[in-house]
Image (cartoon, rainbow, N blue to C red):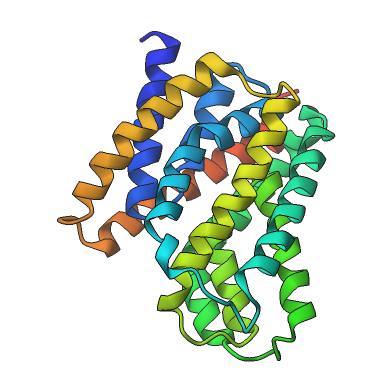
Amino acid sequence: MPPLLSLFGAGMLAGGMNALAGGGSFVTLPALIAAGVPSVEANASSTVALWPGGAASAWTYHAGFGPVCGVGVRPMLAATLTGGLAGALLLLWTPSSAFDQVLPWLLLLATLALAFGRKAGAALRGRVRGRAGLVLLSQFGLGIYGGYFGGAVGLMMMAAWSLLGEGNIKALNAPRTLLVTAANSVAALAFVLAGAVRWPQTLAMLAGGLVGGTAGARLGRVVPPGVSRAMTLCWTVAITAVFFVRAYLRAP
């Protein structure tokens, strides 16, 4: 199969996963690396390829943006954008050889967030008093992670906000989507300006992601959430294991 066609298929799968349960970067990033793209450029290209789907989701929620832990959307957005830019620059300054060693741990962190993020958020709810400074500092850190890698950052935000005392979880979907997209947007812009994006591969994935996202949204109406989430977790665990082997156990 031609490489760009394979990447289009990977984009379709990633778009469908994001529409169903998240975890699309666990498809796009390995596919780009398998296509011969160095890991830092693969991560940058993956961010750009998945950005339109996230932006479209943020727009659908635009009427529901509201405060988080008592902090308004504008300061939260400023903290996220600043952190996202810092994370993107940190990625660009990271050699691919070093990122190859860090990547399995980032994938493991994202897998744990996918597996336990919601339960952890509920269990930790209100354990720390959410003063504005602490909320913004936490959001800045999440922005750095989002710009640097970003896997399951939305679930991490929900868990952090629950820990800081936010109790209306349903109302958080809109600000979560906005702030994740904000971190991805500033990171994507930095990657484009730095010339870190492999455009033929990225555009093939982007097109596939738009198709897969539409199909996944329709499929989500008939597939039980537990089934799609279980399938996503199986995939993320497998990919994480492969990258640990790639980084630490393969023959020199």
